[in-house]
Amino acid sequence: MSFIQSLNQVWSRTQSLLCVGLDPEPSKFPGALQGRADAIFEFCKTIADATAPYASSFKPQIAYFAAHRAEDQLEALIVHIHEKHAGIPVILDAKRGDIGSTAEQYAKEAFERYRADAVTVNPYMGFDSEPYLAHEGKGVIVLCRTSNAGGSDLQFLNTSDGKPLYQIVAKLAAEKWNDKGQLGLVVGATFPKEIETVRGIVGDMPLLIPGIGAQGGDVEATVRAGRTANGTGMLINSSRAIIYADKGDNYAQAAAETAKKTRDTINAYR
Image (cartoon, rainbow, N blue to C red; front, side, top):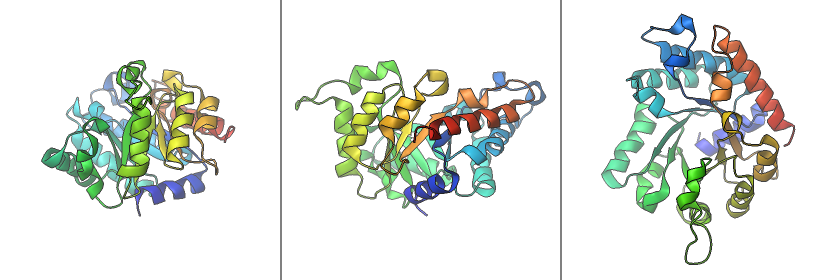
């Protein structure tokens, strides 16, 4: 099943647009996990198991694993999610963006080593990054209008036709790059007007939307700006607000409660 097919099914089955971000920082783990060699895997696995009833996707950020030499734990985590929560896609947040043979290796890393269903990429080098799309059925989610304030340094630069660069990226993604039908875009919840603009450019293409929760994005404005006609089309990500809802031994239950509350808040505006 392709990435887009799995999204459509999981949106319908779970009635959730929530993407749970997995950004493990061992210094924030509860005491029971401190000092364990498999602490990152155990923490993320427990969070995934607790929040799966309320999630339409999971998004592990690769830097949080690589920085702690825990790539093997990332591999094990994605295997666990696929086996225990089949049908919920895993997006590897790696923001790769190289070309040619190097891009081929990054694509193998994401899709063959880690077995992710989709990967985030940087479009700065253009469509020469095509090797990511060569893996049949796998999703590629392109940075477009990111949630950080500094994104405006480049993304809001006007091009020769008077449109900001992020709109050109959206148009290219929707019309030229998406020949396999497996593309999505990253658009931050901190910029709801730009979400609405991008939605108008790309039609029903899925949008990965970070920035609610710890970054302060407005859920109502985000949903109203980004939903498709059938009330889906979005992967609204929350990471720290969910996984660190409680830093004690009650962290799994707190994460589940926060995920449920976030899902329900999103659904209230669909």
